[in-house]
Each structure stands twice: as C-alpha cells, then as structure tokens.
Length: 284
Length: 333
Image (cartoon, rainbow over the protein chains, first blue to last red):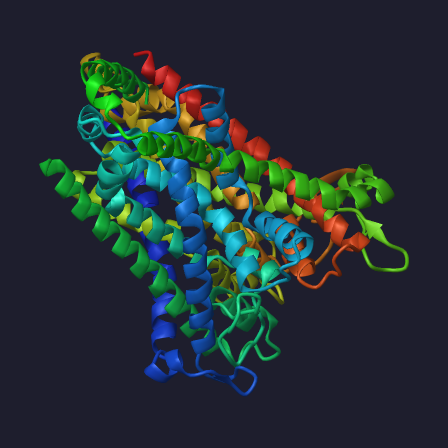
C-alpha cells in the first residue's frame, strides 16, 4: 500500500470506532426510550405499585430517590466546600496537601460496593443507626465527596486572584475575603458540582442495596431511619429479583427511562449553569 | 499545573507586599475578626484533612470486621481456596472463583474497550474536524453518566439473548455478556484520559514530523502515539479500576454462579467466557444484604472487600504514577 492508501485505511479505522461509540449510545437510548416511553404516563409517575408490583406506578421510588439524593447533597456539599476552600485558599504545598490529594484520588477509585459495606459496618452496625435513609445518605455522601471537592476546587480556582488581593488590601481578614468576595463568585461553579453529585447519588445502586433500600414500601419514608424505595434499586428488583420478571418488564423499562431522564436532565442543568458562568467570567 | 503553582507563588509575594503597605489598616482590624479568622483557618484545615480521615476510617473498619474471619480461617484459604460455602455445615471460604471471575470479566472488557477507546481518542484528538469533535464530546459525556443499573438492565434483556443465540446457549448470562457491557462502562474513562494524553503532546513534535515529510498518519503512529503512551496506559489502568470495581452491570449480566470460571487444558487453566460467573463485587451485593451482622460469613465478606480494595488501590496508584510521568515528560519540552 502506498502512503495515502495506508493513511486512508487507518483514518477510516479510527472513524469507524468513533462511529461505534455513537452507535453504542444510540443503541442504549433506543431501547430505553422506545420501550420506556410506552408505559410512561402521569399515573405511572404518581401511583403506587399495585398487585405485587405487576401494575401501578413508581411514586414511592421517585420520592425515595429524591429524599436520599437531597440528603446526600445536604451532607456532602458543605463538607466538600470546606475541604476545597482549604485546598485552594489556605493550603501551602507540602506533605499534608500531597497526602490529601492522594486520599481524594484513592477515594474516587474505591468500588461503590466497598462504600456500601463500609457504611454498613460503621453507620448501621457500629454507630447503631441501622439500615435506612440516613445510613444510605451518609454512605453516598462519602462516595460522592471526591467529586464534590474536585468540582468546588475548580470553581474556586476560576475566581480571579485580584478579588483576593483587593479584599486583603482593603484590610479584610482572609476569612472575610473568602466569605464576601471569593465564595459568592464561585457559587455557580459550586452549584454545578453539587448537581453532578446529585445525579451520581440518584443513579447509584450498589451502596444502597446494603445500607437501606427496600424491596417494596407502599408509603414514603417518614423518618430518617426508615428504609426507602429508590429508582435504581427498584429497577434492579424488577429486572432480577421479582418472581415474574417477564410480566413486570414494561414497568422496569419505564423505571429505567425515568431514571435516565432524571440523570440526563440534572447533568444538562449543570452544563447550562457552567456555560453561563463561563461566559460571565470571560467578560471580567 | 506547574505554571499555576508558579503564579500562586508570585501572587503570594504580591500579597505580602500589599500587606506591608497596608499595615496600619491591618492593625485597625477588630480583635473579634482576627479571632474568627484564626478559628476559620484551623477549621478549614480540619475540613481539608477529611479525605485522609475517611480513607483511614475505611481501612480501619474493613480490617476490623475482617479480622475474625482471617483469624479463624486464614488468608490463604480466601486467596487460594476454590469452595465458597460460608454458611454450610462443611464451610468453605475460598474466594478464588470470585477473584478470577472479576479479573476475567474485566480483562475481557478491556480487550474490547482498549482498541475501541484508543482509536476513538485518536480520532477525536488528531483526525476529526472541529464540528465532528464537538458532537462526539457530549456523546461520550452521556455514556459516562449512564447509571450502571441501567446498563446492567440492557445487558440482561437485550444483549444476553443475543449472546445466547450467537453461541447457541440456553441462557446468555455469562462472563462474555458481562465483558461486553463493562467495556461500555470503561470506554468513557479510556477515551477521555487517552485524549488528554494525546493533546498533551506539543504541536512542535507534529510539525517537526511533517517537516521531515511524514504523512499525518505516520506522524500519529510514530510521534504522537509513542509520546502519549504513558497517559494512554494510565487511561487503561483507570478503565480497569473502574471495571473491576463495578457492581451492578456484572451482577445483572454475568449469571452469578459460584464456580471456577476456567476449564483445565493439559494442566493449564483457560478462562471459560461462556460460563456463568460471580465477581467479588456481585458476591458482596448478593450476600451482604441479608447476612447476620457479626457472623463469620459477614466477616468473610469484609475479607473479600479488602481483596477488592487492594486490587483497585494498586491499579489506581499505577495510573497515578503513569499520569505523573506523562505530565513530566511533556512538561520538559
């Protein structure tokens, strides 16, 4: 083969694999949207499961996911912001910072099921919270923490240095500068990070299997120690644990559709906020 | 990264000068605001250290709960034993079937995901026109956010029947199906890290190659790709780490039979991809939710979690090392 023919061949190979990536996404979306959209209706979203979950809706699972994901964000975002403020505003390069960064990268790589087992051992059993909403939310908070820290740090980093210098030059203390100048301009970036964490918490299954998700509950949880239904766990149950998996398949597709819709919408919101923020910052 | 650090240093110096100039102002600060400032600095140091504390807690609790089983059964049984019957009257605690299944399913996934991911990354970083690149980005981002339970569900209801038909099996839930869906999970990681590595190769490298008469493909193959190799390997390692720690897709696609996933061939173990297998992660998910707390079985699950933790820890550390090397290599230019 001559030079151009070889090049054309390899370029086509690369293009083919890239096309395959697009095809894989379309394949996944096709099945979920086609099968899921046909069962989607207002009553599917707002009704309880009926007759051993073979009919009815997925309302308790939606509520459960909303509760556990919100609680996760309430716990992880303040801690994550605190850690990011330290890393970006206070820390000086040294062994402590190196160790913190190494720990964050390692936490991001810990398998989610190991978080589940850890949550079970420390919060459910050792501290005595039992399995339920709070145990699951704390466990998920720890799991999403590395992402929240990283996203918040990025937001803080994009605040122009002159803001800090201005504050300090006016005689403000470091904390006053951070609170009144740095944090307000980092809010959109931090919101982006929080929403991405929310999306991750909403889609996660493995940790909540061990820490508090319930097979079936007719009502929403009323206290923090109650077990709860959740969309991803509900999908897992309908797909594999139910005694009539073939009968409940349409409901499973509907649940998958709602879950993927939720995750994509959350991510889109995060991207919109990020883009708006970027253009605003560029104008500065 | 390094330029950012330098910038901070010079800014720090600037701030120091500014502080000197405004010393009178500074002394006018109220006692209260100085105290608050001091307290906040300490408080944030504590917040900053939370990642270290959590990692230490995870290690501590995994080991603490695993010790009874290790004491009573011994680590060797876990690592090399082939029977897993934790609550039978003739108990077995061999986790080797899970370890091998995890490694096998992950390796299979990488066999698919590495060529797929690396070629796609080359296309995005080096070949595609801008507009095509801008369309591919959100595609990969969307793949990355797919909840694993949804991928597992698709594997279960769509891919497994296809596998069964192609290989003429009664049931398509096996290591092969799990590898296929896991490759989709590992793909975004491999693509984005490999793409970053390719982009970190300085333009001057490529221009020098063009000037010597190399074609675009020759430049990619002989210049850009070798220069980005450390970073691409890092992407592979991270993809491996992501896949080996993945629970839901494997749990739903691999069939979960506890069995050695191998056939013996003249005394050599060969992987058996068309067999139902159970990974380390899937086993914890299956047995962890109804095991009595504090039992020997419960403790044994923590031993398998430690095995899993050690595997991912080594893989991520290697990836870290490779990424640092890629940065160093390119930073020297």
